[in-house]
Length: 225
Image 1 (cartoon, rainbow, N blue to C red):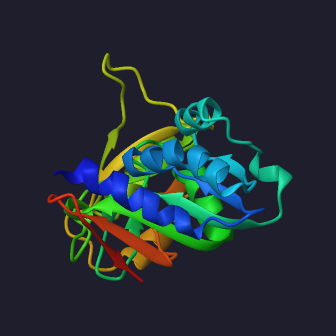
Image 2: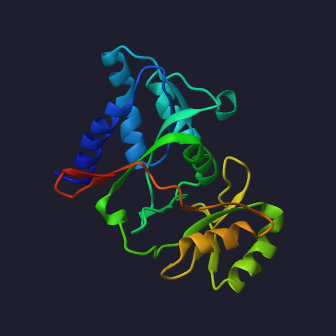
């Protein structure tokens, strides 16, 4: 039994929250991928209909393969449920997201959702954030934003692809992965970063999830509310 077994099991349990007529936001990453692969079979078994809003091309392709009905975020005025993963979860149940580069759309859907369900393995849970913060930046503001992050004691690095080319988000922006050491006050840091002109989105999410699934290495999972 492994984390992957636990993620598969918890994704099946999380689907119990899906109801007929729901509009569902689909996050990105390993846990969200496992859930999306099970969602198509679930709605067919339960004979219900849902519409899904994907947060990235990666998850959109998986959802299309499963025959899920997809819509764009600007076509709806509500989101009943969002399923997503996280790069870290701290003691306040705040999240670091953006490892896959879809932080802007993920935050839009999470902020609009009636219920947010986060799925992550136990290695992602920490007392205080201690990993880099993804920051989506308008490319022409790169140097200005870089300097301002350094003034906040951050250490930015441009996210690149394997061959050294800059990584671009689906919104045609760049990502700066920024180290701040151990972060004691993530909400304050989030606001300071968002106040920098040229910053599009910050990977610190302070909307607390309604349900958190914690996958364990023994193949089991825990539900935190």
